[in-house]
Length: 354
Picture 1 (cartoon, rainbow, N blue to C red):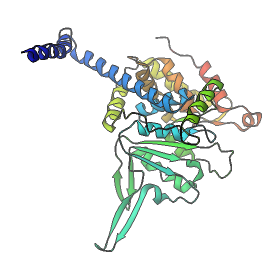
Picture 2: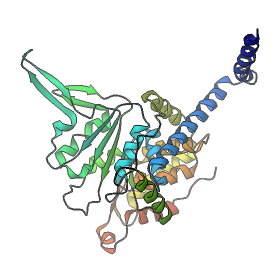
Picture 3: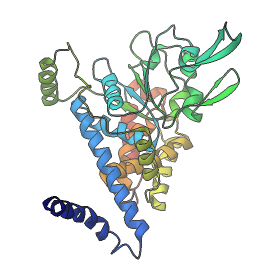
Picture 4: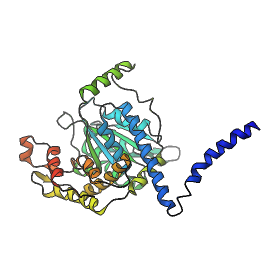
């Protein structure tokens, strides 16, 4: 009897929250349901952010941008000098993600077939069999992508844009979601090949990893020197928070977020302003406008908003635009950076007041 008494309150406590939902939900059950879904999505994204911050210290802005791209369904290029944790960041994300993860270390002798796959002759069946390459995965780390020659870099073009690979005349789709996270060292370093314009344009965001602040670096050194490994933090203790289907659900919720026409117009005006801005020889194409809107929605979901604000668009504009524009040679000589010029542009394009 006592057990029955214990079970009843438990059942009652389980049934009360659903009972609370239907009462006010008579006028608009769909709205409240979508609100609950959005709140859960925000909580999951923020939990993922906290996990990544445990592994990658002193790079909070880069982590936010990486999560923005994940929610927006875009590819990311991370640039920075060696030793700042570019690869660690991607490995940390992979360890929080339950889907498939592949890593390609790009080198000068890497062939396109090493990336996409190739046909192998099978002696027993006397037929060619397709051997799929490492791109057939959910999360692909293209490490030091600018160390490989142009033809190997170009092997990623089709799969990044169309989510499929053509092998021996057959179009093979890659698993969904599919995300390329590429790292590169700055071009000034020896033995690097600049990425072709067409490939750069397919990266939704280009992130810059800078040296950590003094307090963050002290914390980093303290934590790393406690661990048994020589010079890196462990990513193994990180919890697996997401499966492939969860990421697809998060991307769907982000893409359904409300967007005012004025904010859409603001995103397009920013991209169009780069095309005739003094000091820029090449402006951003329509892919930039699309990326600004997608990233704006992802940012809004990440902060727990119900709709996209102009600040969400502005917050990701540098990462969206910096690899899509080209400085005029005279400004390059003067030592003015792309980021400085884009910041001036963002300050002068008027934002709508909502």
